Length: 335
Image 1 (cartoon, one colour):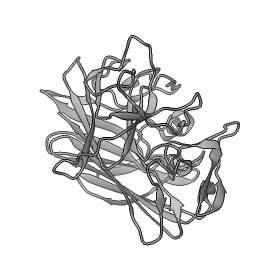
Image 2 (image 1 turned 90 degrees about the vertical axis):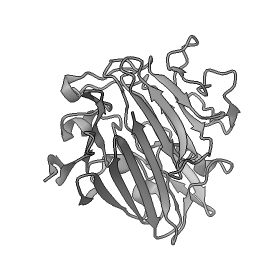
Image 3 (image 1 turned 60 degrees about the horizontal axis):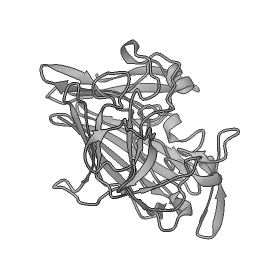
Image 4 (image 1 turned 120 degrees about the horizontal axis):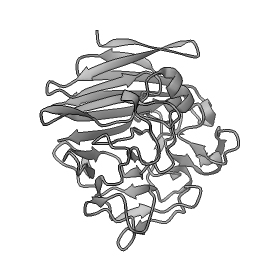
């Protein structure tokens, strides 16, 4: 059986499911937060762990900065914890002392126990029921997250949702990737296939502009190290170039480790991707294999609708109505 107990959270059992490809990739999935706790992929004659993860449910609850989670109901930020939908103003939950709502609120989907659905050798399904008014969001909503390992080493994530009354939805996957196990990923080479980005203010709320990357430190159209002479740090949304491949997904980004040559390609259905270099990462808990996670220990590529879209009519649409199905599919392909 590839499912076992991972402890409890607020009296609810937490499970971990392990899935694998025939080529030797393995992934471990938690029902708490729909977390991708571990991902190991083949590398030459060995294997390489490529995500940051923790060792206990207590560590996740107390210390995880959304390591591997599936945040929602609206991932990323909503300015002032407020938005208007169909003429009605909705005020959202926020962490104490914080001005804006992040990742669906302090008890968002990435910090909640999901129900474990079907599990087989290569896939695991998780399900979550969110009530009308949950964290301030209107309408009951049912979310489904499916993790699949495709041959030889592709992690496919399928996120979907349906609702009972109009609401907003933006789900993503928030793994921190490190392709060579170093303590600093700024020498990883990154390419982001984007001509434009959405600049933000000092509180990481988009200004509403859609600005060209050309001539700025945000130009990743050609592969280059994250580390740059300007000292620019990254926690920003890029506008994806919509050019679907044979799978129907568009290539979004490519990351390569110069240490071992391992590459990761992101292909997605989503119109944007948040690139975070983990400059502010501080984790008091010990990670997998005794690792200590500090600034730049990993990087995030979070396919998404644009942050603060509910308050920016020219940003990517995020409204979901009864009878419709929200769908987000992303693949992280390793070679």
